[in-house]
Length: 277
Image (cartoon, rainbow, N blue to C red):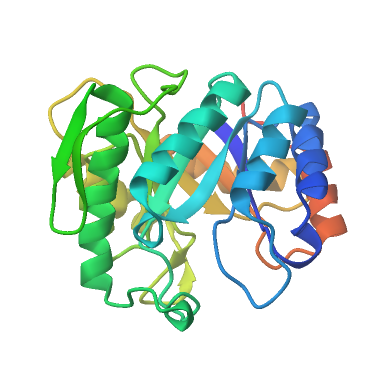
């Protein structure tokens, strides 16, 4: 199992230098991934691409990326180009997690699409465009929302065949997990979106079984990402995480939501739960 961090980009975190320093500290403390938000906020906010550039330059081993980007809110070809550039800059360490995005009015206030059905179709087309721009030369696409005609983008990502694509979702909604099954990993929200409580181990097992039922016949690696919070107690942290590892989780991502900066820094410096790798 690998261990990552889900790091805010607002308020005290809204500084690329702060995030880059946190990432360097996380790398030194033994974490495997440093993933940041892509959101809108009324509070101070750092652009995630600027932050990720700074993070890439301050680290050398740790995986970096977005958790998660609402792909339907962006031009997919620009996201493809930025991620490829970042992958080159970081030495092939980028992972991109995509999702539908919250329906909290933050984006509609700027005139963006609110209908989740439309955004879901845009997300699926966007994923196909990311894949195509990174693997085909030239690439054409004709969809309901996006059209590309014999285009090329360089440089390509350093990773081969492309940057891993994880898809986020909240259980027990099914559509995000059918979507995730077609790509490289599934990132499960820590809250059951119907019960409004922490995901249980049974929830996790049911979700993973559903994803596996919809996976194509393939031997390609597939990551399963569980998120949550572990205490500053190594044994209690292991006791919390180990059942999810045994049930099939390949990553545990420590959530930074609601943590003041210095408290989250202390959590980062404490290091990940010490499960044998």
